[in-house]
Image 1 (cartoon, helix red, strand yellow):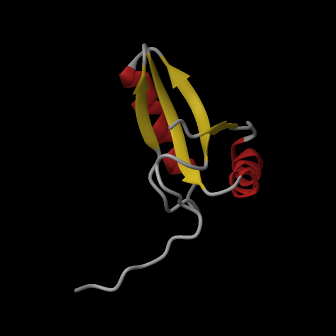
Image 2 (cartoon, helix red, strand yellow):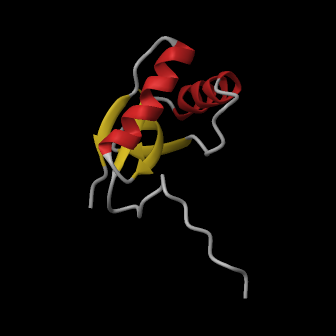
Length: 92
């Protein structure tokens, strides 16, 4: 049986905070934005998700265990891309 690896920044789906990078009415626009951001954030090793929520397609990272961890990544994204992601709580 493979050893389990703890991932300190990632929490269970029902807890923590997400970083929303954008929200789009078109899935194509959301995926295009996700791909552009992924190319520019060469230091980011976690997947950027596109999640449908109602009529919007949200481009996001996470979840992170604490708001402070989410803020640290948001600050690094702001320095790289010159825009600030929105920190949102995970919904249960």
